[in-house]
Image (cartoon, rainbow, N blue to C red):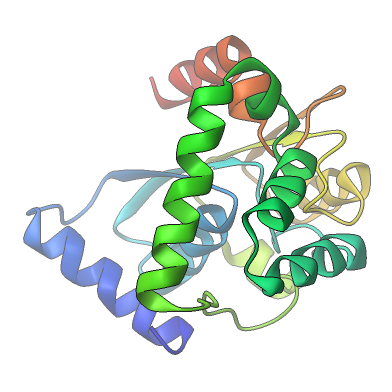
Length: 195
């Protein structure tokens, strides 16, 4: 996928292949939130609800510290990748060390097979106009200490001010791996919202 249009067309094809035409709830984590937002702008008649967990590039841009730490991984060493992932996914690293190691292995395998991959985006952050155009009910769950969002408090405030049908949760002390840090809370809120 070289651009956002490719992303949208791919999602069209996946949903068509599954026979899903409308009333589709979409949930994403991290970049998956951005992808679902782009899709909701592209095909609003198909999407019934959105769930964003640790969204990036929605309410605020990715911070420079995130980019700098990510650049340090370019040396290809496992140690550099582990250090970065311990910073961005501290709860997984501590609570689920075997899962953490599997994720490191997976990232290294993807890099070996496909090289460096950059997901398609239109801008560093979604515009005010784009956020206002997303009219489906949306649940936005963000950790207060998410290293992939420049200012989580500001991101939540911006989304609340622009989106008419958004429900937001800013979780204290949670990072980008909020699903591992606050599994029960995320699960309960997601299920309640989707029901």
